[in-house]
Length: 248
Image (cartoon, rainbow, N blue to C red; front, side):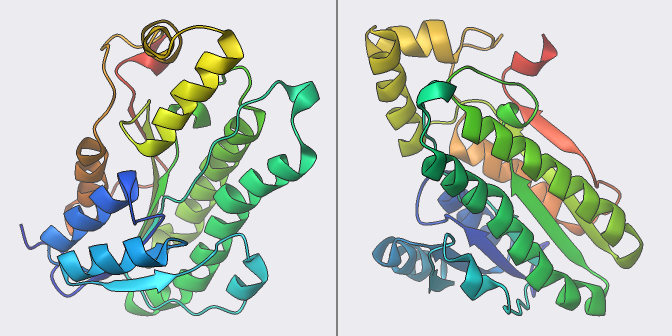
């Protein structure tokens, strides 16, 4: 497909996992994609693979994003991390870190991208949220809080941009087969004192009707559709891809 030919895109956290799959999908649709990641080597490697650009950036350095001017047509806010601990043991600095990365940084990038999108009357903002943007789980207070905040940011952006050709949506996958989830499985195994395979079957997928992990390419396919002109009436929405988890 070439429905994004001539468009420019920025994907954060794009050197691996969901972000890399999104970058490949958007490039395959014709977009010129900028790979934004703290992993400079990984970003440059993927940019070379897909004919895109690399942007080595630490999104926790939010002061550097405040005066940014982004001339991109498509913004995919994907960068994220996870931290698992009971609330009473959760380090305050870790809580702030997750909210900075997954709420404040997306706000600043959206803020930087909207003027260009408004000028041309076209823009697509896709926020990679999670089923945890709609549901909660124990031991994930910062992640759940951040993803709920991202949902609100996305909806406000949709309302403000709707009359100016800009859409904003969330994609809400369940557990995706990525290095982040592999780490979660190990952390949960330690927290619950059970083997990793039992975490997958009895903890991560217990609420899911489909007992498998989501593949990054499945998420990317949905992102590609949301970025296209054919999705111009889709905004302010949260698209679950969680195997039925949120149907409960």
